[in-house]
Amino acid sequence: MTDIVRTPEQQDAVACYEFLLERYTSRRPLSAMCTYRFELGDAVTQCVCMHAAVPVGLTPFQGFARDDGAVGLLGEIDLSCQVAFERALEQVQPAPDDSSLIFDMSAIRFIDHRALLALDAYAQSLRCR
Amino acid sequence: MRTGAPRGQVGHFHEAGFYGSDAEFGALIVPFAEKGTAAGEPVIIGYDDRKSGLLRSWLTDPSGVEFIGDKSLYATPARAIATYRPLFEFHVAIGAEQIRIAGDVPHPGNGGQWDRYESAVNTVWEDFPVWGLCLYDAASAPATVLDVVERTHPHIVSPSGERRASDRYQEVSVFEGLQSAPDPLEESRPIAELVNRSAADARHALAQIGRCRVAHTTLEDLLIGVSEAVNNALRHGRPPATVRTWATSDRLVVNVHDKGHGPADRLTGLVPASSSTSDPGLGLGLWVMHQLDVDVALIHADDGFTVRLRGGTMIG
Image (tube, rainbow over all chains, first blue to last red; front, side, top):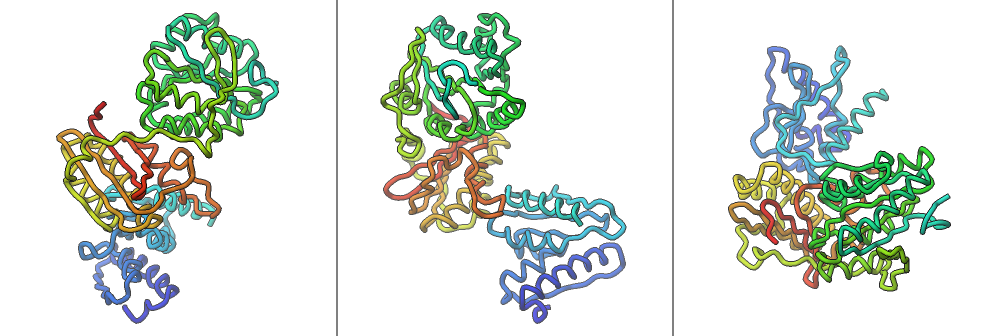
């Protein structure tokens, strides 16, 4: 995957793809393994955080599509990964046949007010679409 | 039109009175409340149960007074400001020309930044036609507190009703607050010290140290506080950012120190910081910290700036 996430535009596109692929594989008999080189730095977080299965400690948080249609949030979200979280949210989208989108935050270990405000802004933006 | 002492003035009329007995307390608060209700002005009282009970028994018609029973109103200065503001907005929206408030600012020790609160509300409530009457028990309040009261209230009233300007009043921009007393634990060697580590590392260390020492909710508040303090130190302070933690069986003290000067704004933490950007989360960190049920102190010193967070069984 490394060579197709060199630029911010590529990273956003691939992060979106990763979210949709996670949704697809969560409901169908398909498994996929995505590999990224560490040299990508923050781009690794951007793309890897959209996966349900991630090596421990690789990303501070995960936000991924689940088989029940919800978005699972895991890990810790604070100022240090605020930009990555907001970029991840931009790639999250409800399934075409779902009228609502649920974020399951029961496994979040820490989330600060900035991330909560980002979630609120995301919800507001969905209403405007 | 405003009635009483603030007649013809705009903004917050911040007045202090000193009493030495229940009778003197009554002589100050009863006319304040009764003349307000007679003029059709909202009168908001935030006293404890005993004083509210006394006032109810003295008033001709207590139903005209809004008693705030929420015991957490004065839990922290920032929370008191956050509670009062929407009340003021509501009353102004429905046509109030003056709002009278009197409450129990905690004053035996006047710690926990209440000195900053008494100074800050001169500015924070300037947009509202508020008459704030702050009554202090001269018999029990320490001399340092009474000194602060004279320096934070532009107006003074006596139980006999005599009014005067406080010649010792200091504007918010030059107010000299009380120094935070050192915590005795700080004299000892910290149980943990982290230098230039992430907020996540600080949270993990504190979670490990704090478990079973303080209530779960207290520990969670401390984790939010330390997270904000470390992120601020790393982003806005001057390195190194050092987190020191002390612990007893039922108490935690956490200092987050950097070599910078700290925030210059006197209102820091008491109100959300004003922001010139469109980011609604910017400037909220220290304010969020001051909403928590833990003791927060912002300490400016020659060697840098420290945010001290304390939770659990408090001493003194």
